[in-house]
Length: 349
Image (cartoon, rainbow, N blue to C red; front, side, top):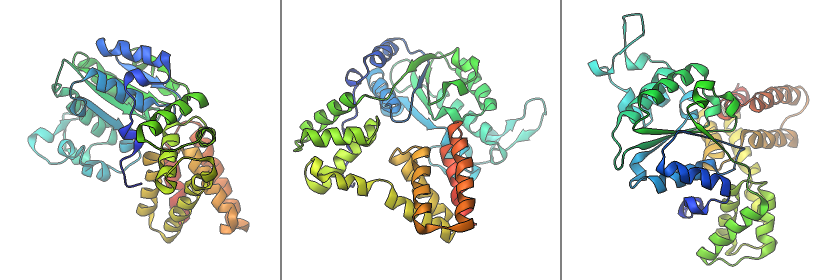
């Protein structure tokens, strides 16, 4: 889709969030910028809720809201992190400023030799140390926090303590039990559930009415049922139907089925098998980040592709065993990108 995404142009305001209990908690946080832990299943609207909070709380949310996906650090190489334009100014160079003292060792350590934990700790301190563009505080969001290791959580706790007067921290996670007690004790928990089918249908009707799109109720109900509680996917599928068919009707449901994940999975696997790992991983990132598929959904589609005459015999058996191991790791809350990247690398090997 080349036109602006409806998920962006129709991003909900705080008053429009479909879950009233969440809306009440976040409205209180506007006037009292306490730290928050937003937790809930994939597709429950956690990130959209935080952005709505920032637009309500900050006169300049583009500068006073900082979003960091933990996977941008722990699922990437140190070289990739250093070259990311969001972090490069903080992590490149070997000036006197760039040297860091290892605690207790008395030895200076250049940025290029930092561990990932040291990198993200430094980036957080830099962002937290900036004065807010407007108002008295800014908001730093840490997304996918279930993949944060305990050693980094200890460092994060110290940053939260040091900058508590000028920075609100919002931690987004699917598994709050992965957070250490000192972090949880410094944050107010906000539990989010998957939207109901009726709530998703209400969101879709509002967007389609605003866009002047023809639709029927069966089409809206089909999309709502198809996405299984993921409002972001529902909006994207509605936009896809409109751009391809000029309407949102139940008669056109095959467009959604064809757009789904299967065809793109085949392209990604082709690249992995040829040894084009970087291109395959970019396709994986598009699925996980841009399109919002969960690791479990991507793995299920990969297994479907394996079974459709792509592999057989010993090769298929070996891949099924590997996929089962990855499925177990995903269930434990480990990084979706890291585990599925391992699968793609094995295909290339």
